[in-house]
Length: 330
Image 1 (cartoon, helix red, strand yellow):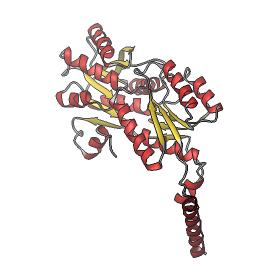
Image 2 (tube, rainbow, N blue to C red):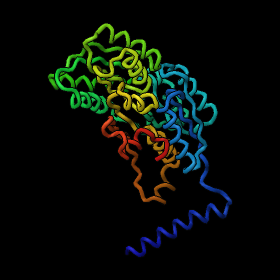
Image 3 (cartoon, one colour):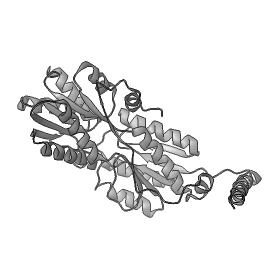
C-alpha cells in the first residue's frame, strides 16, 4: 500500500511538471506589494532582505513601498490603494495605526486582494495571517532584562513611540506588568515620542533632567532606542542608567560595547519579511501546487511568532546573538 501511494505521488508530481513543460508555461508569477511602516531604519532593511529572498525563491513580482516616517498612516493608506490599482494580488502590510489603517485594508480585501500582516497587525478581519513578535511578551522580556541585571530598587523611565501603535502599547503593558509584580520598581515617567532618533533623544534628555533619580530606561523600538542611547551618552549617565532598547542598529550595537546601552530585545525582521512573502504566495496559490509538492496541510496559522531574544555585553559575541544582531542573511 505504501509503495502504491508513493507511486501515485510520483505520477502526480510528473504530471504537474509535464503539464508545465507541454505548454511552455511555469506556475504563474504573482504580484505582491509589501507596504512597510518606513524605509529608513535597519529593521526595515532587514525585513526587505527577507522579503526579496522569498520573492526570488517563489518567483514573485515584489514591490516594496513605505512612508518616510513611522507616524504617516495616511500615506500608507494611499500606498495600499495605489498597490491595488497597480494590480497587486496580495499585500504584505505592517500597520502604523491599528485603527486608522483598517479601512484601507478592508477596501483592498473587498477588491479581492489577499492580506498578510507582518510586524504590527491592523483592526481588520480580512487579514489571512499575522507574522511577527509577541509584543506583550517582548515587553516582559525587556523588564526582566533590567530586573535580572540591576540590583536594588528600580526607578524606571519608559520611552515609547506613537500611542496609536499597537506594538508599542503592548510592549509597554507587558513591561509594566512585570515591573509592578516585582515589587522592586517605581515608574518615574512614561513618554510617547516620535519614532525618530533626534526627537527621541531630545525627549529622553528632558525626561532624564526632570527625573534625575531614574536608573533604568526602557525604549521600545529602533529609533527610540537610538535616541535614548544618545541622550544617556551625552548626559554622561552610562554608569548610572541601565538602558534596555529594542532591535539591532549600528548605533545601539556600538552602544552595547561602549556602555550607553546595556541590553537589547532583538526581533527577527528578516523572518517577518521572508515569511510574509512566502505566506502571500501560498495564499495566492490556493496552496494547491504547494501542498502537492510539499505534503503540507491546507491550514494557515492565524498567528506566527517570529521570536525575540535578549542580547547584552555578556552574550553579544555568541553565534546566536550575532545572527540576531546582523540578520540580513539567514
